[in-house]
Length: 212
Image 1: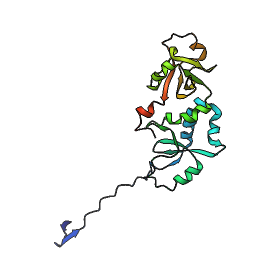
Image 2: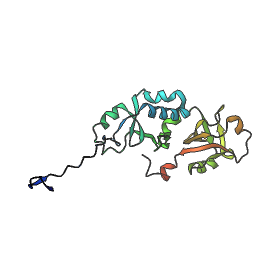
Image 3: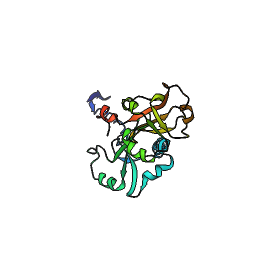
């Protein structure tokens, strides 16, 4: 408390002025599950469209019910509306994951497709690449596909087109981006890259702790 004397000599005391309270910032529930915004939906659909084109609609309107996408802790999940109703009863702090993780948004808001989406991309893929048995292991270690390891490629595949990578036994191994068109693949050097690696099922072992 501060003390002072009035002109008549009386001692006058005054209470200290209260400090101003800091402005409250709005609460943002970063971990809350929510629908995707328009920009987020566009980013996800553009990435999926590179691999399955207009077949995206088949992921949403399915014979076994209606499915949707939800964002939870920067990850995009694909799930049925029936499962969504069940998930809403779980406290958000206790909810770890739901449905199938299709990928995640980076800090710069770019969507990165995950290998966990492979089972849903493979049935609807428009462009495919098959690798020879001797090159499967290399791809499953995260390496690009070389011309020497290329078994087959879908006709009329354009350069930089998204492709799903299969073994010669038609087992989905992952996905990537065509580094060369179908026509270019026929005449390039055996050591030339024909598919840029994006994801592979070997990540279930290499990145076991981060895949959800």
